[in-house]
Image (cartoon, rainbow, N blue to C red; front, side):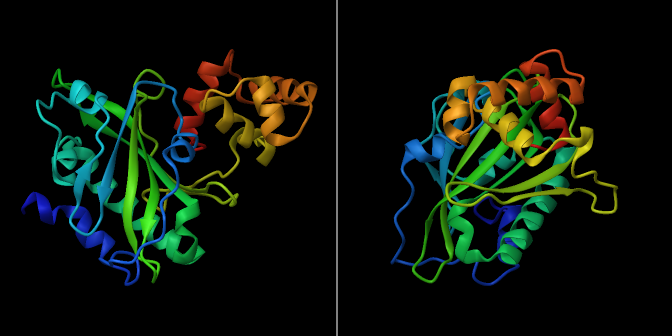
Length: 256
């Protein structure tokens, strides 16, 4: 299989209307908006992928440094070759689950949806370590087909070296969707372990983005005292000693 015909092409083509080349496109979100949606809990990089031909552009310099590329990779196939062989099947299934969930929500909303899941990637040293993958659509055609996305990979091996195989589709901007799926799908999935409320999961996500108490207060339009109370309750429920431990457990639990 050539790099231009990598394993995810078949997945993306399973649903008409998801992937198609068009000349007329909607404007992409600003890079500031995109980066505001990522979890910067470790060293990360991003790149832009043009879906019709899987070509890559706008590479962050960390990509080459972390994975040992002498020149920026030109095709998504180069990235897929870094995935641990035992995680390839999960990556393929995670993409399929993402496409099916976006179809269920409505492809017309895809510009306000983000997908995420974790897998191991080969480092420049040759070792495989855990990364958190996030994909944010940036360009779609006038008919609504998915043309371009920004992929962000965050190194989280120090927080969550084991993969619980969760796939998350969540809302960004104007949408508040949060859909957590388990792979394989026949495994039992507890949607709210530790009895966390929706507000508490929102606060965990903001903590993972690097927001402090005052910023969370402003973002959620609640008092600083309320944020502190929520944080105290979250730590008690999850039996975590600090925010770093909490974020690691949140990755393992599929909240992020």
